[in-house]
Picture (cartoon, rainbow, N blue to C red):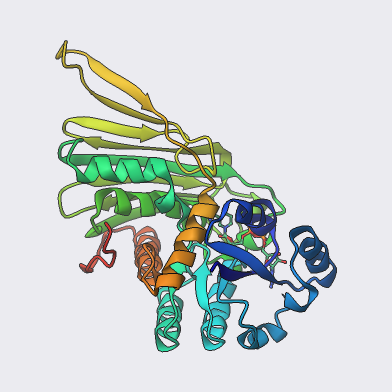
Length: 351
Ligand code: NAD
């Protein structure tokens, strides 16, 4: 039986990506909506066949506990609301899929993990690309040593953000600027591709003076991560430039790159290695794989975990670890010096 989901927050991501993606899901189904705007909720409900009795707002949200049709909630709210709505959902006896970044601080992430653990409910952070075929293939390439020893990773993820991006430019709501919003994709990829956790990080940030968008949050963030094997990741993220979403993982024997790497669709992957016929030349091939909806894959994974009472591939601990590193990166940028990180055990069994 399919797992019933409530979508919490009817903003852009929900309306443009998540609701349509249910059409491709095999294990997850949309059964309820949570929105502060009744009219919008009614319109969306009629479009997706959600019954009127399954429409909630932020005040009666806790009464989800009386609705057995809803087994999981998907939190798609501004970042500062993730912790509160996750904790309330766990208390209402619901499993929680939460958008990235998991929250605005390590302390909030820990509260979310504790609440779900106490309620014996699954908690997953919506790292869509860890469910995407090209990224999974890149993980396999890196882990099977086909690239040789991993040496360098470089990634950039950014966009020229509209001035009306509202909460994203408010520090209290967003937690930060480009780094936690889109830079997190570079950070997360460096970790899942290598299967390692960084031991030392450097960061610096810069915002164009006088740009009203960046009064509270940073425009650009540049960061470096050093991993135990010696792999170095060099990443940039920004809110003021034309879309750029690329990455390259360089090993001693080969490299894999993607451009775009972090988009919702249209990913392009290339692999380059020494030519077997001519040691002075490289063979570079494009590898194209199916591109199902990343959001459907992610929601189906969570539904399967709920059905089988299994820890998701990207549990709360995965979001917590990114937040630890993000906090260290802000410290590095503020203090102008590198930060050492404590070693943490890998949580994920299928890595
Ligand atoms: P959005 O601004 O379009 O939507 C946010 C929704 O929250 C709106 O419907 C808004 O009305 C509602 N909301 C409720 N209370 C609010 C309040 N107090 N202040 C402001 N809004 C309030 O944002 P979005 O782009 O849909 O992002 C939502 C979440 O999804 C964020 O955490 C974001 O990081 C994440 N996201 C993830 C991806 C991805 O690829 N996984 C892409 C986009 C956004």
